[in-house]
Image 1 (cartoon, helix red, strand yellow):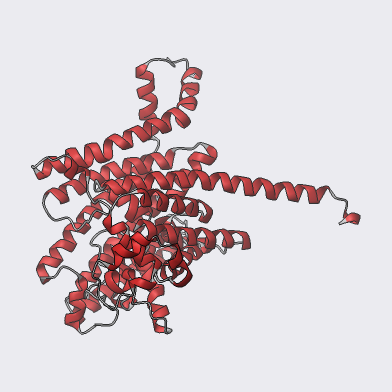
Image 2 (image 1 turned 120 degrees about the vertical axis):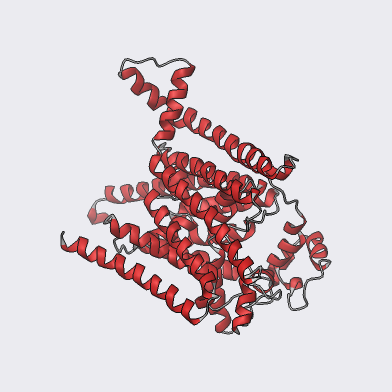
Length: 480
């Protein structure tokens, strides 16, 4: 064993030991902290799975649209189907903590903005978190940019209120929200309460009108809501990107290159090529399903519906929302808790940011030390770091000035898209689609379209930059 391997093993023991110490010490302090530890260890598992499968939505669609490599995009589709089977069981047993989101054109627009941003940044929200665990400086900037942008965007008002349609304002004011929530001076608040909340909310299982919960979950949510759309997308990917290379290889081997059997063989070959991502997706699905079961069980055990109630019992009241709650999704989620980190800092510096819906009514801004979803994201980074160390893939990597620029710009667009769409590539797409939520595919359509647009814009920028550099090099040094 060489010095690098010994150092990496030491790093693994330090990370796992530190997280274990936190779990044990906090539980001995108060048993309620087991609620936080549940988030911590599931976050750790998510980080390991993401790093193992190189599970990044930005890479998936960038590779597909830029160089025609479908492996990651195919793996993500397969992973969603596998996750859906696990989620359906949890839903059918009544132990799900998932809540469907309103669907409408706003989800497509939000996904479009997010898709452009993730290509610019070189990583999606979850991908940037796990790459942070690998020591990637650009990914760290992306996470910071997403967080800061969200924290600012949810509290903007003033001139931006002039962009709000009167119908949004009237609908929001009629909701009877608590007086401490200043809806009249918040663009995002009027968008949420006056438009998004008025949109329909449903799942494919509910649309199926099947009374049996298991049939509704597996036929409605999984078959109709996940498997069939995913199969169509995979067929599109095969025909446009994978088919030509497969048939060419088949012909070179002297085997049949025509017929339905050949096409099915090519389709199956494309799916098999994404084995590592699919395996990661399977474990992500199992972990996410167990996560819901565990969180629901802990809520029943302690007689609560939200961790804010446990915070109150422990004497922590700062940062609670007007409803006495904090962000406590009960399943895998990213971006909201990162916005809370920055929101808490802004508040400590004197910014009154608890008069909006995002922080003040729904999620709160508790101290990061007692914020359940915070523990999940930080442990996700730790889990990714452990897996990277085990595979000798951990390396501190500082970004260049250009990469830093794209990371900040892309992160800002992802932050805006996340808030308009009520989630990111995980919360608004991957998890929602896997749960049969209609809004998930709408965000996904926008995100895929945004990724395509982002690839085209980046290609244009790169070609323009190279042309300028070539023109410069062509000028004699005496004339420069």
